[in-house]
Length: 272
Length: 96
Image (cartoon, rainbow over all chains, first blue to last red; front, side):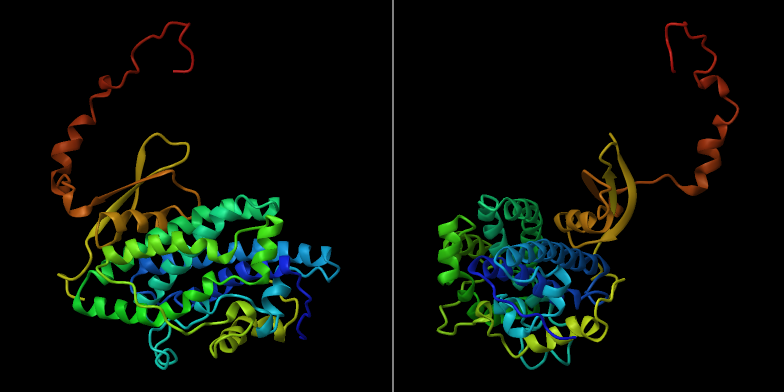
């Protein structure tokens, strides 16, 4: 099945960046289904994946309407998710990283590292919580409604994963070492979440939503507080900049999409 | 995992949206009370079952001994007069 082509306006790209963050992290979390350390947490992780896929569905559907309003085809949620090329996904890179603090080990050890998973969930949930809080005031009533609903989910994701980060960071020697490794691995990907570009400026000017940079202060305060409780400290700044939100992804994204999209590509229009 | 390392068992009580009382609905393992509440939310309220959750450490529950069942509960079998079915209600009291 051939890919869809898009000419996204700044508005559509702003919505797709959020939708893709939720969609791609959801895909990563779904790898835990049936593999989590305990049954209860298996359900918790997949519940979270379902919350995220719900958020992305609502946003992708809305992106389709905005895309059509700007003169393009009106794509539905499935077309956005399953028939887009890698370069047309705009999630921040942090969402697509394999569930592993060790770049080389993830292939051998799927579903992966639990410390890495809960720390990334905490970071992304805290970021999304700030975003949803601001987006609930969006001039786009559809976005405001999606944000109001998603905010409740993000608050819970932040609490649940934050509790794990504290327990493991301030836990045994082994759990602390793993959490520390996860922190070192993830921290360089944080900067991207708060970098402004022309899409942010357009969104801010239109009242659609906040600039990325406006979320940084609250995010820093909340993450620093959780890490302090976990007796861990914030790593130093890294010169590295990831670029997923511009459509330039890590080497892991292609594999993720291959798995996520293969069914729709092989059997177009399949439903269940 | 040895028995020592196993997380404690928690009994879960959920109050439904319309209900007034918390009803026992199952149990789960969790490292402590705060996490047990979150796990209970994940496991037992996924389908809008609840508006409030209690958890109690299973080891903190004192239960009657099943071997005492006949001594404890059978003597009540022939005491129908303890049910309030012998009163004649005034007509003004409907639907009792």
